[in-house]
Length: 480
Length: 109
Image 1 (cartoon, rainbow over the protein chains, first blue to last red):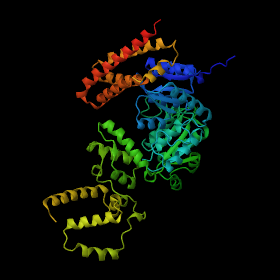
Image 2: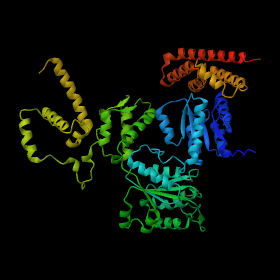
Image 3: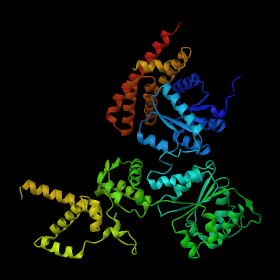
Image 4: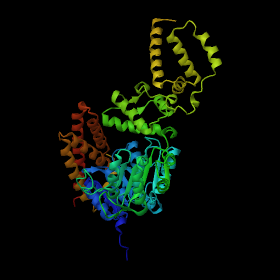
């Protein structure tokens, strides 16, 4: 007597070309695998909801929607699904993007029946061994992040560990480091991924309206309350509530938030009866939370209630090559949006990006790229395209911070060496000598020379270009 | 035409299955043939993309390459090449339809 087929064992195939459906289905059926076939995104999602299959074969180009969106919807609902993406586009960037978004495997047409069967069998085996829903711990990335530096690997590991629990997550980090992305990643990796993620920026909402925003209100409870309002906590019921800039919350509301965390009940403004809600809390701040506690601006008991699992988002300057990975990925995406043809950064720009401090972190990087895209065109970003105010370390340290990178050369050697060499020279010649000496002293690195001279690297690159033109003209005239 | 791929994929469901598969391939290719003659750029791009995958899967590698080139010309706006590519793709589809019809005819009892 054969065992009944479990719905989850059925391979769900979503492919719109009927003859391809037939070939794939025939291959799988001959191998003894139960298959259900649909040709549209809508039908595929409906079948997924019903079957909750372990393995999905999904064509990326569907007539009524993007296969990528379908995949994300499926994985949000059931993270432990092996989605094997099928596409006719062999782009490596596309493959990386899909794998980072949670695809189990990536099949490029044409592929034969053996390849198809191997992918499905591998997926089923991987599921039987896999513990965390997505992605597997040894994989380098975690959607929606870009980057695989050691600093970010530590963050991914923490997100994967904490996602499955109900523990409150407290995210810290400088502005622009991706705290909101981190909250999104925690939610997506959690069993609550199919439920809402409601984000509230406590710093952007006036203090007198924040309680209503968090807990809701009844009609007529205050001037301007012309309708009942659900509130973020109730809207996130079953899901995740993300409180950004939590340290901006005033003390009165902090008290009510603490009561909510202790009792899991909310009382909307104007209501008399509390209501139970089931939310997982993630919060974030770019301040130092213990400083806020010590200054009396943040309740200590609330801090310890929230600070259960801290995740610190590293600044971009500590993430090594991630700055290049992020820049080049975003450059291509943004170029497509702006109708530009930019595809990469030249090596000099990469070197500049590696040495910049990025006080605004990824957000600043995005602004720089947007500036380049809007004001320039071409395939390659070169230093002359960079904003002139993209300054090196010296301008961006805080006044009290030690400026180790700019330790001046010993005054004595400066005073004795330069004057002799400079006598009889024009100012332009002096400038050129100083710049070229700095570049030579820094092993040919223009960005490091720029740091030493306290100017932007693009300034030095422009001067070198101008000198090249002058030298060429002089050479063609036969000057000495 | 990569005959090895063609035979392998058309035999994937066994001999009894083959006539139904050939019949469906003819339906799909007739549809794509009609779409390749359209003026609608979005429809042309979708048809080129679909044709590329389908043709390559059954070993019609030259047709797959033509479909890819045609799709790229639509993406990049290389207008001058488009009419020639459109004719070439249509001709390629017609040739493949001829091969499949012959396949169907050779297996009729």
